[in-house]
Image (cartoon, rainbow over all chains, first blue to last red; front, top):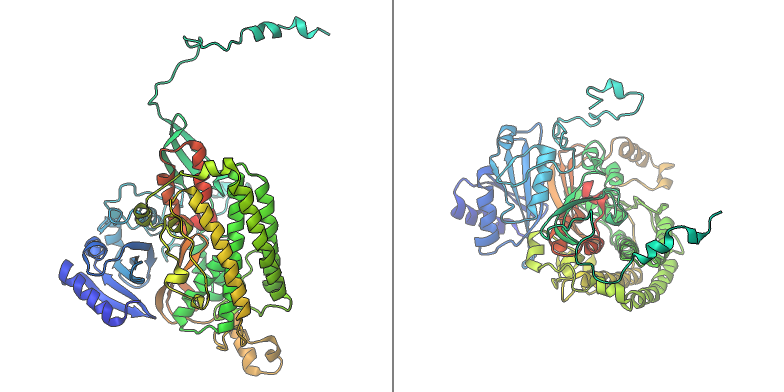
Length: 176
Length: 420
């Protein structure tokens, strides 16, 4: 596990390679380290950590979205990097507003890690984050004609009426 | 009644020839060699291990492309967890990967314990190890039965389910349920193991040792089984790593990556076990690695039973775990704690953690965000089946369609975990 000093060293290396403003914040919480980076720089930061850093991370363990509503900027995408050689994990987090997420400002990392394909689709499906450069961004779990992004915090639980024979007429456009 | 000889049966028989026919028969057209043919497989197909739908592009019998389409059992568990108190969400997350429920529960409880900074007593950790390893054997047994069934060895299904039932009996003994036991809770386990559990577990491991030998003798001596697995579905280790594949699939390529060894959790560092790896990376290695893992799991179970420490089975922190029943009659504080825990649940300080463990299928990560209330703000499971499914394309491409079924079997996807 990366200790707070090591995390600062990683952050300094990233700032030196990608840009001074790329890392907004370093978070060390319960023994886990996370870099908070700007959405525009995500691809560069992960490419640097994956390929060019002195201590590279070879495995993208997880990519997932999160909604911090009502805090702003509310949407976030988390990347869990793993170095199987040093047995270290490093989280990379990027937070953005709804407008930025839907405008497609966040670059895809599928060219660095093919595993991000399904997981970026899932984040798009559930949170509406458009990844720029993803070849086939479409809904994965929800039906393709579904409206809305259900994992957002302002999307109500139970917002989907359950169709039975007796109530199907009450649902708008039930016949489609 | 007409005699059989009066039908044109004999005449038709004479029209059959064993000689080679040069010209195609009238009405049939020879298809050009390069024509591609798209076939839908599933979602309701017995060999897809759940409601998995595959769009296969075929050239003759050779698979040129496979696109998995998922979402048929998406139930929104992650969303539902946001509306449940932490101790109630355990019940939800257990139902994701429905063959590895102890692992789901552990990933979630471990994440919440990390958020709380809660220590788990050593006895609880050992009890968790015992149950997780039994669960790993049960999961691999189910995989063995269904995979052999896909490959035509039907009787394996009943034999492996017979042994899995012995494990479910043990789960019923300790937790009261056979499936989805909700035995793990934040801070420890729900109840100590009953008298007789240890002896029955030792009986099971003793029986299972000989049974695994029998199964291996049955399958490894089977020419058809071996021929269908050997040198099929080879994908390079670098490609699998890029695809995020973990668990037995990556170990079959010779990479000894196992979180129990690499980043020990739940006192796995106390046990002596080995990591089986493959040498070729084909389906046969994937099969052998899982069989060898079952043996190692039994060693861990026996060591955990031998070294089971005395002490509490759940944390003494009354703000997190329910007080014992007998205290409720005598202690006012216990009653208040019980009431508050059941009605409101415990509050978790704000923060976010990612807790990863080694499930039977690979890295199972649980990402939990706490906002200071008694309900999680976000629960995400990084399910190994979901990530591993992306490698199906690489395994099946260029192979025969019959090998596609073998690829799905050796991938061991659990659709409840994929769709969540």
